[in-house]
Amino acid sequence: LEEDGHTVVQASDGQEAWELARQSPFHVIVSDLRMPRRSGLDLLAWIREHRPALASSFALLTGGADEAVSEAPGVRRASYSRRRASVS
Image (cartoon, rainbow, N blue to C red; front, top):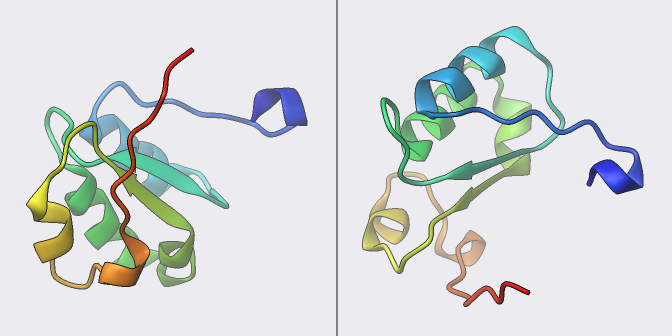
């Protein structure tokens, strides 16, 4: 993304991600489902409540097949996909 001219901001855990989301206007958020101190679902819930326009640009990822994503309140099945990532 940075190579295409976008600014990328990283958080070390869910709490830091939540604090960054409170302080900065983002256009897109890509979050891990499982993070220390706050989960990606917690972050998504806050975004939905406080920045609802951003919720449609929120991608929730996980390194494993996790049923919590498909069973989470308000997460549409159509918006969730299981794919294997290849790392080069």
